[in-house]
Length: 250
Image 1 (cartoon, rainbow, N blue to C red):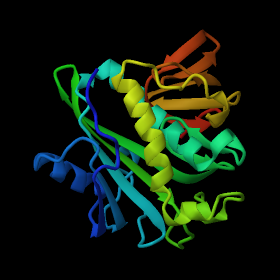
Image 2: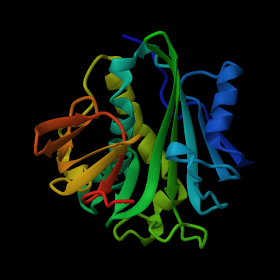
Image 3: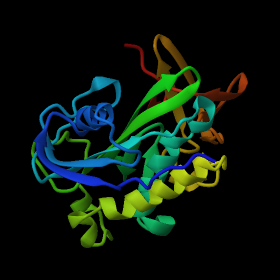
Image 4: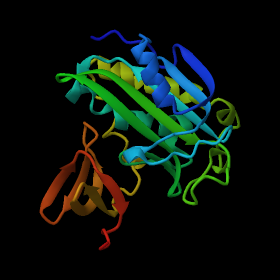
């Protein structure tokens, strides 16, 4: 079993940075330990999936990156990104009473609107994940720069007030549990959480490069791959961009 530290130890709080992922990678190069976590008040160049801009105004969101040094086979580490996203959903909404969901592969949704996102960047040595930076962004309070399709945690009915002041305390613990499971060779709980998966049972389309596949979203496989039911049968999708409904002609 790989010996790992708990994410959030140490925890470094900063003011305005380019992005917490940049800082985490810089700290990695300086020898920072597994579990080092960076939280910033704002980001000037926050980014999401496919290098999209992540609006990061001061005091309106949580901008967090966790440096990991798992030294695990890539296939063993593969489920962690999805497991971490599901862990954030569970931490914000224990028992799924509120209805916070994960839009595969990395968006946190409430009533179909984007509440946050997960981004992971890995470094490989052969087939071993030597390091990874897990980025987490959450909209905590309304800000006019947020996209219209987003929502802030303060607008989510039933969210405890303390989550707005220190949401990282709840999700760091949930992520730590799944990180330890992964290191122990256990399968993180992914397939057990179908109710957390947004658009389950709906017709969706997955765009990966120039390829598109459409079908009914059935669930998640043990490694985090999406399972679709298509006219040709069951299909596993390892990566791509999900849209709800059939893909329209561009």
